[in-house]
Image (cartoon, rainbow, N blue to C red; front, side, top):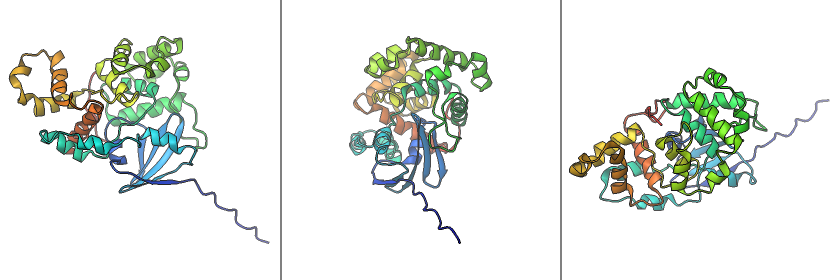
Length: 311
């Protein structure tokens, strides 16, 4: 007698509709390195020990999670923020930013784990996007915990305690080069309490910048990335080599005499203040628009290199 077929287990799925939300644009914006395209319009994301597959068809999205986990991902993607209002705030007197905002109107600033962002953007110094992704996955597979319910191939990003077990030599073996000593020191600082992550999360933008740049291996650019992508300080405006080129090409010519008199250390902050100071509360979104737009114009929104930059 033939046994009846077992009932198929149907994975939970939540379907929602959103405007100003595009998975491919977010994945190509340089803010996240554990967001992988696994099919047409489908991405798999790992964050804080959770894994999600989400599919997009125009403004319709399908999330592979239950009702109990959806609030986490809703916050992760910043889906309760009105990005239409941010789009509307772009000055009509700035045609370059208008074009950039239109091109990247699906970008949202993800709410990622601050510790992961600290290590990720320390790794990002002098590395390309594929190399950063590979390094993060190697660290996670070597020192992180398997994600419950996964197939055994997905690992959470390691905690400070887990990553602190690695020696500098072992970190170098993971192709981290000179960054290995920074990572080891930051792990030790976090485990000892010198780098207080709970305290950091309560700081405002200015306080967080001052605090972060006091640690070995964290310069102004990396600290701004941590503030924007890990602490959700939306006024943070990271300046790497691409942003420098944009500021010089698009904005420097508007006040050349003023800017020519400034030393390099003050030049970029002055341009940002003059042209992006009006976007209080969303300047970092504008930064993402122009960063993505420049990559799009140069056909670098796939797996190509993120411009190499220092700390």
